[in-house]
Image (tube, rainbow, N blue to C red; front, side, top):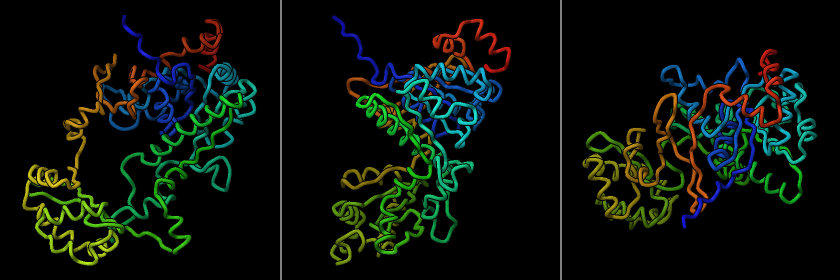
Amino acid sequence: MTTAPAPAPLEGLRVLDLATLFAGPLAAMMLGDFGADVVKVEHPRKPDPSRGHGPAKDGIGLWWKVLGRNKRTVTLDLSSPGGRDALLRLAADADVVVENFRPGTLERWGLGWEELSAANPRLVLARVTGFGQFGPYARRPGFGTLAEAMSGFAAITGEPDGPPTLPPFGLADSIAALATAYAVMTALTARAATGRGQVVDMAIIEPMLSVLGPHPLWYDQLGYVQPRTGNRSRNNAPRNTYRTSDGSWVAVSTSAQSIAERVLRLVGRPELIDEPWFADGAGRAAHTELLDEAVGSWIARHTREEAMAAFEKAEAAIAPVYDVRDVLADPQFRALGTVTEVPDPELGPLRMQNVLFRLSETPGAIRWAGRPHGADTDEVLAEAGLTPAEITGLRARGAV
């Protein structure tokens, strides 16, 4: 007898994604990857900006194909009476609403926590903004770039004699998305005990600060402010990127003392291991120039393939510096299924990142890539109890 596959772990969970660019929608995508029914709500005449963000093919934004995956798409003008009422009917049967409007916007439309929780006391409302729901900056426009700057990340990133450096992708938004998905699941777990929903207040500046480690504690206790050190570390050495004889780059890490010793033996400088300062990471970091020269000069005499093979044989930590072409070709990523192929009726097969982690019994899956603007409006509104005549009327008034 064939055993039916187990349901996805979040099957039966309904999520309304009202958010744009990028933390909120990415959090909703993560929930959808593990079975949640995510309904993406967009303005009828102003689609989510991610549809036009970055490169496109045949006029179709490619980023949206990832960000909008596993989501049904509907259009509602939430600022209109008809759109407001329709959203409240959708919220009555939902478990989670994710939004990222400036504080006070939903309240101005009659869709604040008071109205949403009255429609559904079990609802979890995840509010994702740059600076949170209160405080002197709450009403400022907020983006991940500002969080990367204000958290201290940019100040410690880059070369010592160069400017503070921002990442060329949505780092703060992505970290906030992970935190938001975690916060939502925490609130849903609490709901299982209390029977009541609650508000998640996620300020993008905060998760970014959390991942930077003990910087506030260092300053609080020691007055220490970490400077920019490029690829080097103040905690251990050698730790850098090094160029090979064939023009490639590799990264070496020696966070463990035993690894540092193996690396120095491999590159022919075992005498350095006997130096008193070599006994711990801080001591090695104080001699970064010497250690970088020892490791870098050895690597410069070998191709990437030769350096990788020698380090692996010595059980020392090394990795090639990849671009996306290398990622797609790498056998480890292929073995893990990190990048998967998703069929798409608009563009054909699409390769994109797979779900975030593997579950042995109830795995997630990408069921479809981002769908066209408003493709599921009639279906979703009908499920909420709106009649065809009501939907037609909303469309005629521009609310849908």
